[in-house]
Image: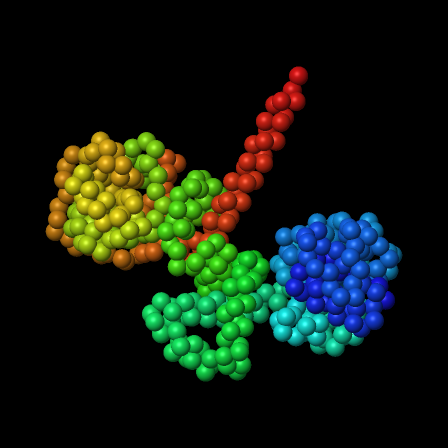
Length: 453
């Protein structure tokens, strides 16, 4: 039997070596400078690797799965089986099938259920698709427990994603607890508490903690796919979205580095963030920049004020700190200014990055001179009352958007966008992808103009 393995990362290397040890002739291809496993012939291209193969195994990551299938399809033999083991959404597995064309009749969606580094080629699998039974037999020959469920491409991956909700969530919460223990000077006590609840004790704790950090990007993608699946099922993915964000944080920098996250958001236009979030969290344009060129990104410190009364803002200033943006629900009242020059300078002294106010302000010229960015519904020379009542840190509504304390607030000349804290990393990545796409389309437009006679 001849096996082709596309992608010689950790899992690809293990499966390639496993089939070689079982007596198969194995060819492997990876465009990166990955080591060639023992007993495996290194191919120079996808075409060379799959030509003459009885079974093609794709482990190129979800981002490259469709392209890999499209490259392999013209070179597959008439009886060749194609097994996609990449962790991906059901929809992407269906796109892989479409990319294979006629070979889709010999395609299997293979979901890896367990840790390949721990269990090797004997890791449990779930297989669906037209070739589920045939592909299952190939992996059972390695000693793997395989559940061939038939059905359509994507059915196996759906089961894996449902498992991801728990497994990746467990890894994420363990890393967070370990980091919290370290920050509090209670590392050993926290580790002991976690290990006592795990069947594998300290060994399981270390595997989950280290594995989550090491494979953060791939697991972020898996958790994002899980969040999408839960939403499609009508289950709010509150914890799973946070899990994805926790993994995303590991791909950027230390997860406690809030300043780096806010600075990254400060480089992204609100329009791109709004597009990435499907226009959710965009504050009504009545809340607008009070001076040209104002821009801010910060963590929301929320204030609920009675219309025309700013006692809550004075109280918020005693609690505010570096990185905060004070977000004020003033009921949209424009008759009395809730802040002016003096409050702005007090805020600057506290390290506050700016304010978003569903109400009025005054002393706009002084705000501009101080470089203190403010968004509000308008201006009024009339000062505020200072009687209350108020709430600091409570959930508020500003310009039709609910804001929680700790949410990410980004504002520029286009307006204000609010990103839930649990979705901050995912939304940042999405906004950057929007910018990359727009840049490519812009260049294409310029090219069309240049081609005109």
